[in-house]
Image 1 (cartoon, rainbow, N blue to C red):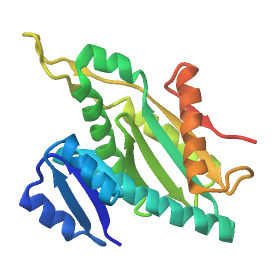
Image 2 (cartoon, rainbow, N blue to C red):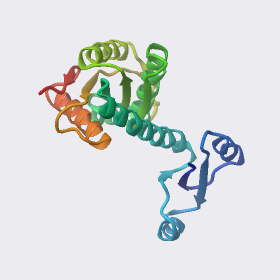
Image 3 (cartoon, rainbow, N blue to C red):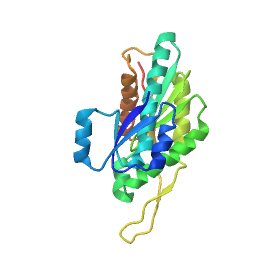
Length: 221
């Protein structure tokens, strides 16, 4: 099924063609500004709303991930197969933005993503969730195995260093950060939907960051 995406701003013909060629395709509706977008929203709400062509990749990746999450969660619940979900968050996002600029967090996340793609199994799924978050879905993996993956991710994150954008006449500086990983496994009591599965893993990540960050927080009980 095609995903309908409303983009605020222009979208090039090359990007439209590339997205149309994806499995299922993507219908792109571009509007010049927020005022024009209101008319589109009122007529036929899109599946996704993004600001600018540059945000299309992450938005479509996140949309595809949520679809895959729903399928894998249903399979785990039906056949009682183990499934684990990791939410990886860059610690102290606000402080990094204040010191090095907004682009620094994005570069950290993308550099970590590239590392993870080389270290995860072929059946594992990786996708951006927010400006400072990644999700990793681990089919056929119980909580103990997921914890090991989370610890490996934290070790990889410690090796990620990017350059800040220079500003105000200042040179670019090296930027690094720790990550906190929330881990939730399924099937488990009280987690009956893929949305609840994701939110439980996210809540574990927030709990770990509130406790000081740079740790793995596994949902228990």
